[in-house]
Image (cartoon, rainbow, N blue to C red):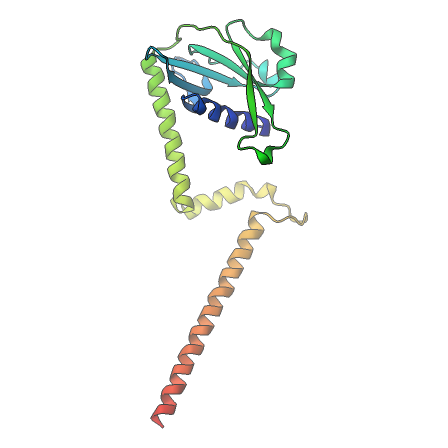
Length: 223
């Protein structure tokens, strides 16, 4: 599970890359057992060549020192770190890898994004560790995955079967607080169903009253 801090850094990084004219996508699987790049971006250099950048997001010292493979296969590669973590591990960052430090805004309500970055260490350019054709294919595949998610979201819950929805609700059942008094999805769903039933009965009653009134008027006219 991603922490709230990781999600904030990921969101800010996405827009940072977009503002720099990059094509960007998260969680891109690399070929040849090169792992998964947290964020991959591509831009055109002044001489019309592709520049590839890889970003590994780390929110804690344990995460930074984990044995998970680092997918630094781009021309430029960065660790993306909160400020407190950067100060603790900055001497451990390899010479060739850059460091982007995340700073949350003190008042996020007034900002479009939760924070901003400073470049505390510039990366050294390297040769790609995979072919550019493979990178392009992986980027396109990841973008297509995100488009598919967006289309599914736009279509709403109707794309899921009743059985799928029921299974998803059962998975979330441990989070249901029977006695906590808080309002959650189950309570809202039950209340919505009840309200819909009440509204349907009201409409049916009104229709019955209207039909009865018309019948009464017709009988009076026949007399």
